[in-house]
Amino acid sequence: MTVGTVTPDIASWPPLDDDKRAPGQQLLDWAADGDGPRLCLVRGAEGSGKSALLAWLLAGTVGRPGLTVHATVPSEGLTTESFAWELGRQLGYGPLSPDRLLDQVGADERPLLLLVPDLHRAGAGPADLPSAAPQTLVAELLEPLLAIPHLRAAVEVGTSGLLAAHVGVEVVDLGEGGSHGTGQDSYAELVAAVPRTADARPDWSRAPDAVRRRILDAALRTDDQGAAVRGLLADPGFLVHGSAPALTAALADERIPVPGRLREVWRRAAPELTAYHADSAERAALLHAAAVGTDPDLTEYLRPLAGQHWWSTVWARRDVPVSAPALVPGGEERRLLASDPTGRLRTYDVGSGASLGASGGGAAGLGASGGGEAGLGASGGGEAGLGASIGTVPDGTVPTIVRPASVRPRSIAPRDARSALLLDRSDALLPLVTEDDPTAAFALERIAEHHGSAALAEEDSLVTALGSGGTRMPYAVVGDRGGTVHVWSLGEYQDVPRSCRVHEQPVTAVTCVDTADGLTLTFSAGADGSVRLWETSAEPMPVPVQQRRYRATALSAADTPAGPVLAVAWSDGELHLWHVFSGRVRVLPWLRGCDALALTPGGLLVLADAEGLHGVRLRLDALWER
Image (tube, rainbow, N blue to C red):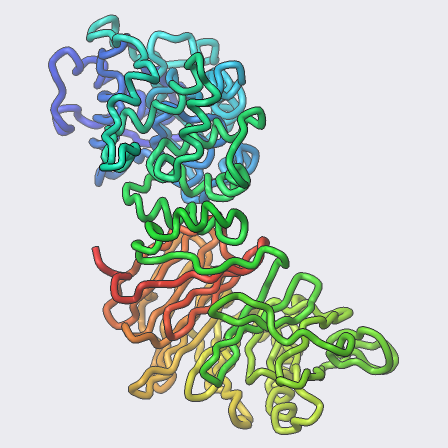
């Protein structure tokens, strides 16, 4: 593996003190020589400049071709798990467990160069647990990473013997120079350094950063450990401002009592909380998102601070995993139609997340014939048909208990509260209509027939994505394997769609929005990581509106008071909000990967994943403020 063929000239890099030029040149030579040792240990006493030397190497590579540092993970206070989360984020995978990270790095085709400052200070949590020792991180993650042939690392180890037994090692030794530390501050000293509010409570927002990073570990060392740790864990201000890696390590110890369901809430939020979030309102929004629907007391404590942020969670439904959520067109009360993994269809109130339309007289089956629960498209002989029907309850909503026998919708495009087009996991389009609405049945069956016939005639016409949109008129948007996007009106019969080949790769997600000035904007994502815009009365934009090395997993758009907004979920876990007319993008740091999205015109974003549904309120007036 060759990283560069010519060693960079150290004179062209950021300046170094005279006593650091020789070790700097040695480190630079190692980094540039892709065929040399794959591990470089940076050794030296406290204060000798080890971390500064790694920072110098990183700074010199910025904008310089031929030498790339792919990740830099300062290890002080990190455990195996929190180190894996951070490395996964920097490599573009999102926060992953150690095992999944190793699999992902092994499959990565890039020659990777890592910098690991402060390995000798790694570890957190109770001292009697393995997670408190840096050797655990070495054994569980660093050694397996270094066994991957295309990965190289420069690691700061102080005067420890960490990784010294590794075969084939370059050593940059900065010697015994520098000043030595004076030891660890006591818990009492750290507490004394925390400012107080007018009513004598700790004001963690004004506490020194070093205090917030170290006080929990100091509490675990104090003689009165139980009271000290309980006091910190019961203080919502410390949960928002304290060290997220230290809290993660402490809460992993089941022996430590915690208030309410904090351990469960923190576990849900920890992978994202351990990322760098300087904004306390954002940390509060993340922790609040994990607490909603799980810990009512913590939810209420965090709500005021979380509400100051540009996004905050308003409800969560974790009782049923949900796929294929879509907004039901029409009416002032916004409703959501969604499928669970077994294929049951349910409706929800978008504002509260409450389930709607509980059936009072047994289960109404989709396409049911005969007694009991029947499946979508079931016929009298048990054979799955193309069409499907659905019964209704008196208020006209979809019954809550619907159990299709064979159809598992992965996308839904509703026409109204009683009819929709479904994309099954078998890549077949299926109409779902009421028994007493022949107009809807005719229109939806025409769409399904059109794409079914096209797929039989040409493999590139196989449907790969289905989306919806529109406020004046409901639309279904269909994407296919050949990269073509097709737009159908669901409000009136249409013999053929408006179609345009937008991508060179298969379409992975589609949506559309009609604007107040009469435009119909269609957004589509391709398997090549592109997101494209097509205004249906003109040609598609010549360049993507976004291009990433990851795949877009879901799209949703709405015409909001701030103008059209597009929400994009990506396979690396990122969630982007794009202001269409200005081109501004904001990243929403959600707690986990998102499988599906639905955005209302009022700015409420519904996210669906394996845990269920979550409703997030966006402050549209502050969304793109910097």
